Image 1: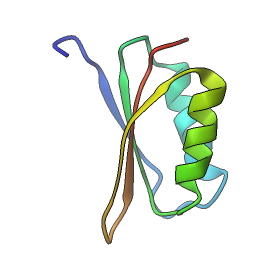
Image 2 (image 1 turned 180 degrees about the horizontal axis):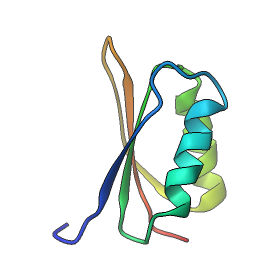
Image 3 (image 1 turned 60 degrees about the vertical axis):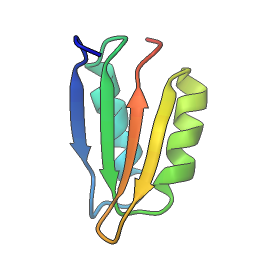
Image 4 (image 1 turned 60 degrees about the horizontal axis):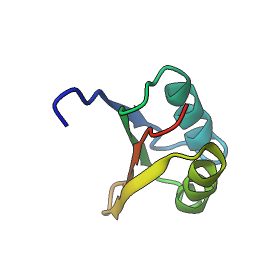
Length: 79
């Protein structure tokens, strides 16, 4: 998307509720069409982010994981 605004939120090393708090703060500054890329190390972030997306009406585009981090890409579709 040409006009996409992508924000990386680095929450590596924080435990619940840190990653979701950081995501929520980034969401407050976002607009419809923006993408938030959440980086975390807490495995609970996957279920927490899924619940957050369902509650807020936004879309998880991908969840990837490697040895260093979990990366969750969220598209803001609703404010």
